[in-house]
Structures are given as C-alpha cells and as structure tokens.
Length: 106
Length: 119
Image (cartoon, rainbow over all chains, first blue to last red; front, side):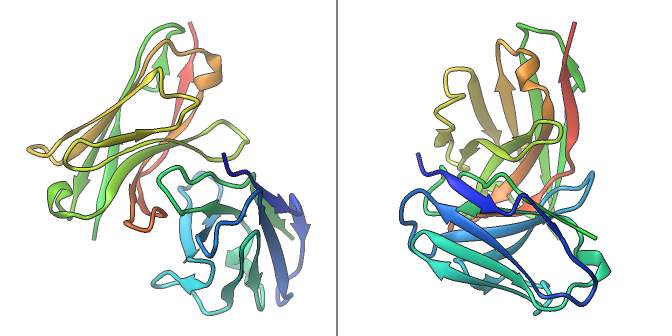
C-alpha cells in the first residue's frame, strides 16, 4: 500500500500569509495527487487534482506542485475562509489513500 | 447540480450490520463514467476509503475492510448502498457517499452523518 504523509500536522498562520503544506508518498505516484479542504462538520471539497490542476471554482490563490513522491499545496495569500483542514490523496487507482491531514489555524 | 443524499440509521449495535443508502439526484448513475463510493472519518481523525462501485456493478474494496463490506447499486432508483457487517466501536465514524472521477479523485460528496456503534 502507498502511504501518504503530510507535514506539518498543524500550521498557524495569519490572513495574508503565504503558506505551504507538504505531502510525501511512500513510493512514486507520478502526478496523481489531489488536495481537499475540509471545514468542521462539512464534507471535504476538492481543490486540486493531478498535482497542479485546479478544480473548477477554486480560487487561483491555491496552487499545487510536485511529482514522484513529494508534493506541495500553496495558498498565496490566506483569506479568512481558508482556515480549515487540508488532506492530500493519491489518485492513481481506486485504492487512493489519504494523508492524515494538516490543520491550518489562526 | 449533482446532489448525493445519504440515509440510514445513526446508531448500530455491536456485531450487527451497518446499512446506508446514497440517493443521487441531478445526474444519472448509469450514464456516467464515474465510480460511486463510500468514505468514512472516525471522530477527530482522517479519511478512509471504504469502497467504490461502477454502475455495471463492478466493485472495489479497501483490503482492510473487504471481508465485511458489500457495496451495491440500484440504477432504477439511481442510488447505491453500503453494508458493513460485524461492526465494532472502531467502526464509529462519519460516513460519506461520494462520486469518484475517472481519475480516481472525489469530486462530489454527500453530507456526512455520524454512525455510532454502541449497545
């Protein structure tokens, strides 16, 4: 099984900050990496797929990069609505496991 | 707009079977190249994929749950269902139904509701 590890587990930041979250895969997954945003009591919302493709309707301040085993999600200028938990998921097969999550807090 | 509406009990007794159904509206299950599946999230923890089904009935299960899981589809009702048998407290979680794209990421999710396993 491919294991996904996110860092950090918690990230403290302020409105306007540029933040980066990292996701590492236990083996190469090419560019098959998705990112989700989850707010308390809500279902996850897809942000990015194939490492860097933005899902429709997602603000351009979100971007993704990476390939192989190391990936990053960057938010260029944090907005109040961005404080949430973020998950990565490898999606090279139906057996796509998720990372453990990164909580972005004020 | 695609909508997934989950239904089922919020409380299940240990050793019994957890049964949930997800009704899809705003799109047809059997006209889609997508998969349909279930994901769960124990309280305060991360996301775990349970399994997926294609409209044809082909299923894919998480190996860690495979022996206890059955996912089925009813195209006439445009819905799919989850059965998880022999549940324990470890199966207490928020259960989500969702649509899985042909690229295997999840793009539409139903509302999650907590299913508690307790006597």
